[in-house]
Length: 269
Ligand code: CTP
Ligand code: MG
Image (cartoon, rainbow, N blue to C red; front, side):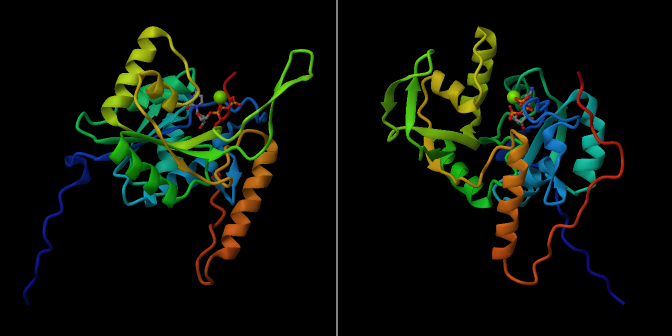
């Protein structure tokens, strides 16, 4: 009997990852309340963080994922989030910092020096889609930096400290920033390094790249790409998931309840 050998496959770690996704998940979820940080709360039977990571894992354009989690939960996440859910693209789990910007900076330090694009996505936006990832990465490859954002739909008022309206703001040029956001690696590294050195703080990464003077493009996202911030967002998220499930073809498996039986991360005080 003859045997044939399959061609040797080089381990992924030997290749330079072209697109690396950073997932800040090291917050405490103060506005959500409760004892478990919101990224570990269940949505559709799985932790929010798993929902976000699964979409990144499934995105053909994403080569590698670096996850930043609370220091006390690094081991738990390696075992119960990454290994348990076979998230093979997550090659590093790092401890996050005091603020989101610190967590992103620590994750960024793990990115290969020849990587082309860094994609940043908040763990607590679990309803992001493959299309958003593809579009924002394509735009960043072309323009250098791009974010998913949503045009303002509501009428916007500027209000005085006494609670009366000063004026109605023209909403036409106003967009709400979301994640994912994608950048040339050299731009986002320079932005974080300079911001850290000069004590500049921002709530998203695009702000730092704008501050450096680079143009940042906007790709229209979806109102479904909610950021889970307060308890009511879980209710909204479940409704969006349910409507997506309904819309899918028959025969596709529904996500099983994979809630971990082991210790869940607790908030540190
Ligand atoms: N984040 C992080 N490190 C921090 C703070 C936040 O990695 N020091 C992450 C969060 O885990 C989340 C994302 O950044 O995935 C967006 O932050 P936000 O929605 O503000 O989450 P929290 O800071 O956890 O919530 P809150 O502001 O209500 O405390
Ligand atoms: Mg926060």
